[in-house]
Image 1 (cartoon, rainbow, N blue to C red):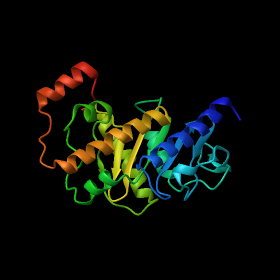
Image 2 (image 1 turned 30 degrees about the horizontal axis):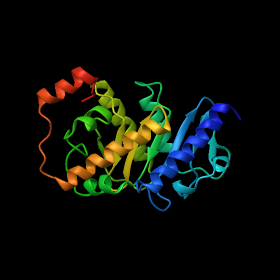
Image 3 (image 1 turned 90 degrees about the vertical axis):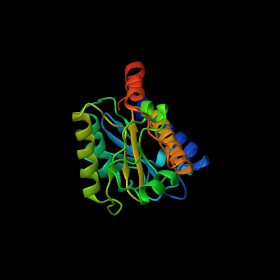
Image 4 (image 1 turned 60 degrees about the vertical axis):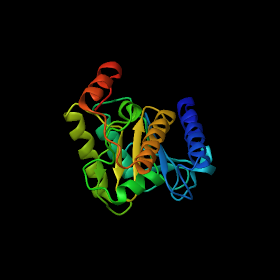
Length: 221
C-alpha cells in the first residue's frame, strides 16, 4: 500500500469522525470517497462515518469493482460519474462527500427552482457557488448519477464550474481536491442552508456585489 493511499485512508476516517461528531451526518447515512491513481477508496455500505476503520475501507479498481475491504457503498456509481465530469474542468478533483445534512435536505423538500440556494452570503458564493437540484430518484439510481454529471458539464460550459449538487430529499454531494477541502465546502453549504431557513426572505447579493466577488476572489457565480 502506497503512502498516498495510507494517508487517504486516515484522512477519510478523520473527516468522517469530524462530520459525525458535529452533526453533519447521523446514523449510517452519508459516504466519502477518494480517487486514487489506481482506483478509488470509499466508505463501506451502511457504515457510520463516526467510527470508520482505515483498514476496512473499500478499495475499488478504476472500473469500480471491489478489490479489498468491506463492501463499498452503492453510491460509488454516482461518485464515479461526478469524478468523470468534474475532472474535465478540474483535474485535481480527488474527493467526493455525500451527506443527508438536515438544513440542505429541509430546503430541498419544498424547492421549486433549479438551484438549492440563492447567493445570500459572500462566502457561499466564494467557497461553494451554484448548487443545482437533481430531481428526486431512489438512492443509488443511475438516473441521478447521469443527471448530476450532466449538470456539472452544463455549468462548466457556462463558465461557472460547480463543487456541489443537491439530490432532492436525500442530500448534497460536494467535491474538491482533498477530504478536508470537500468537508469545508460541505460546511459552508449546510450553514448557508441553515441561514436561509432562519431568514427565508433574505434578498440575494445584487449583480454589482457578485461582480465584486468575482473580481476580488475569482468567485464562480
